[in-house]
Image (cartoon, rainbow, N blue to C red; front, side, top):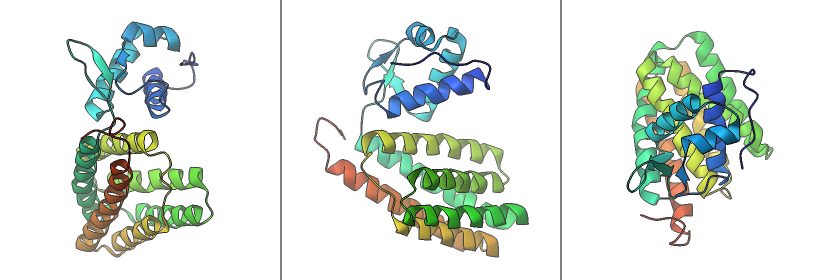
Amino acid sequence: MLDPLDVQRESITDRVFDEIRQAIVERRLQPGQRLSEAKLATMLGVSKTPVRETLIRLEHVGLVESAAGNGLRVVQPSIKIVQDAYEVRRGLESLAAGLAAERASQEVREKISVAADEGLACTLASDEPGRRGADRILHTLIASGSGNAKLATDIENYYVLTHALRQRDVPEMSESAQCGEQHQRVAAAISDGDAPAAQQAMAEHLDTLRERVLAMLEGAEPATAVR
């Protein structure tokens, strides 16, 4: 189910987090499955400490939840969870976009614009890995460009949650050129230093994403997506 990790490559806790998160996305760890620190540590070839730290973070992010009785389990597909997560992301990231328009350095503004252009180009070329990479860079740059480290951390957690649930529960959903064009509008407003426009453009972008993901989930079988 899970492969032993090369503990020398980078922070072992980060590696464990990435592996368990990806196992959830790929349903190697099934929705509703109970999670054992000892079993996961054995499968990954690590001690229980990084696994414990990872499960705490995943619970904070929202990809695992308390199980009946005790312990943790993988979160079930849920329209409500997805809706709530995107609503929080909308509030956090629209605030960050406005702050980035006011505070980001010229270098960061230029990198945001490049990421927006690359993302749209990858979408039009049906380059999904490239599109995902550009999307990640753009949202991370805007979060860090806000100059608020706490805000950036919260944005990271909700980005991880929404993307993981989207990949797991609506894998057939492709990206649209509309989202790429919305990224460009966000980037242009930040470049111009127009905080209200940046906030509005980011809010519209995340509203679009939320509506598309929820529409896909609404069409799922009742046993697959619960309210």
